Amino acid sequence: MALQFQPYNISSSNYESDLFISNLALDAGIQTLFDNKQIKVYPNPFNNQITIVNTSQTAITKVSVCDLLGREVISTTPNQISTITVNTQGFDNGVYFIKVYNNSDSFTVKLIKE
Image (cartoon, rainbow, N blue to C red; front, side, top):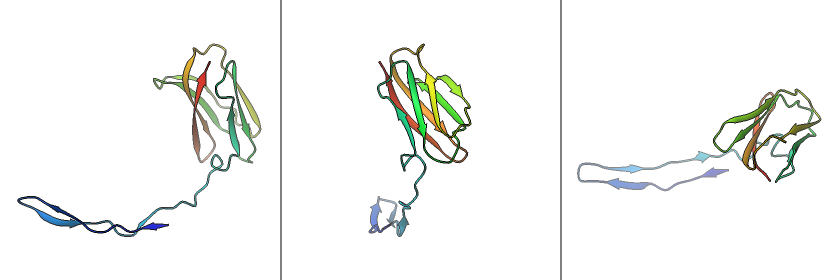
């Protein structure tokens, strides 16, 4: 996919120039394990646990859960390919972000604790 922009004239009392961007290329073909829905995080909203299902052949190397202020609440390094369960019984109600890592990528999901 390529986008073409027309020149845009910028002028002031001391300066006049044409500013343009030409042939801006966007690669829309890149897909990750997360785009392909090979890793799923549920339920949302959650109560006492979060489940991460990995149907890819790439191991999950780290799972990190942060609160709305960015404080890491829990971190684990499961290094597993299949299903991972994160115990959330001690979490306060509110918004959390779970970040799932593999060897080459990461994926962040916003979750709500009820």
